[in-house]
Amino acid sequence: MGLSLLPGVSKPDRAVQAQADSRCFEATGFCISGPIRTFWEAHGGLSVFGFPIAPQQEMLVEGQTLVGQWFERVRMELHPEYAPPYDVLLSRLGVEALAQRGRAIVPDAGEQQDTESCRLFAATGHTVCGDMLQAWQTAGIELDGLAGWSDDEHLALFGLPVSSAQVEVLSTGESGLVQWFERARFEQPLAADNTPGPVQFGLLGREVYAQTEPSVSYGERGLLAFVSDRDGQPEIYQMHVDGTGLLNLTQHPALDVQPAWSPDGSRLAFASNRVGNFDIYVLELASGQLSNLTAYWDQFVAGAPADDTQPAWSPDGSQLVFESQRGGDTDIYVMDVTGWQVQNLTQRPVDGDGDPAWSPDGSQLAFVSNRAGSWNIYMMQPDGQAQTLVAAMADDVGAPDWAPDNQRLVFHSLVFRPNTPANFDIGVMLADGSSRQWLTEEPSDDANPSWSSDGAYVAFDSNRNGSANIWLMRVDGSDLRQVTDGPGQSSDPDWYPFQP
Image (cartoon, rainbow, N blue to C red):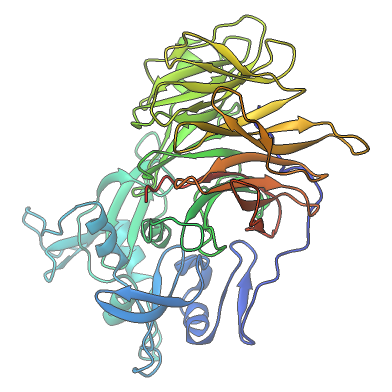
């Protein structure tokens, strides 16, 4: 079964390399400095821009190479050729995000005009009304030194409206009213009776940044999804394998664990106890839409809530396999990506079966079971037929993961060695259970391995330094290096499925 290393001894907060005038944020581990810090602090700070989610760096913006920095809601660009406050400008992320979704910017087809509660923006042909208009008018970038906000100051922060208000998916994954602007997205949640809540600013920076630089290699900009409790609660993060680009993908007081990228990298499945028990969720990374796939079936079909965990995708992205206790025992189930067509694949009345992993060619499912008295690795066909023991281990084994060549499995297992306490190590073997060898042999727990998409490296979590962190190594155990270094505990890595 999956081994969690999150509980344990905390380490001191990560040391962040910073300039003398830097202000650093423990929530994401990034700092702001210079004109960007001055701009962030002078024009709304956290409530308007959010936390920094990347370091200051060179980037290509609308064909121009410049230095900038990503934040949760915006991207700031440095323009030293201009005098303050114009030396920092906000990118047109609203326009970029709509382009990523393939949505054209067109004027409203209806007849629009200024009224007491609405304002027509002739330049784009859209009106802003009611609470959305009030939100637009209550913030801005200070340009003239005078009290109050001018239209130019509102435009500098938000830009012109580029859509009408309509019901869409909010950053929270719920439905509500959404209106797009050149530099922002306004969101207004709706209660069950359609009563509107307060207008909020969407997390455009996080969403657009998540879609940049998808190429993966160990020494460059590969992506890992993993679990960290650095903000006090286990949540899903992504990060480049060089330790940069940390991004919190889920922000919820519940436990969000066991991330799994979809085969095309556009979605992330994970387990969360947001409704009390653990369910399987899928996050659409481009839109931020969040779906609970198992709650309805547990409540209204199976008849009672149950813990559903350890999701894994089919190679074509059409199905998810997972472990569940909905029948009273732990079994392996499969469902389509809508949460329907659910089938129990193992159906054993006493044993525990879990940690399913689909082979890259789609022909087999590796999983672990204690049906022989201890946890061992088994294989079965995707319909549950031909369940076969392939690796009998001395004791608990878990987290099998396939190599891209479809020939090998990496896994963790409890190992007993003379004169040392038992601990979990990472092993590798052929899919038939032969040619087994250990990649780690430390007096620490090394667990939850994930094979890189090019087959050259393995990511895993380890508490070898006293705190759970993410590590990388070659598939022969060499070139070992630590990726995360706190704050808090990090575990359960999953490598982005890029195919070189």
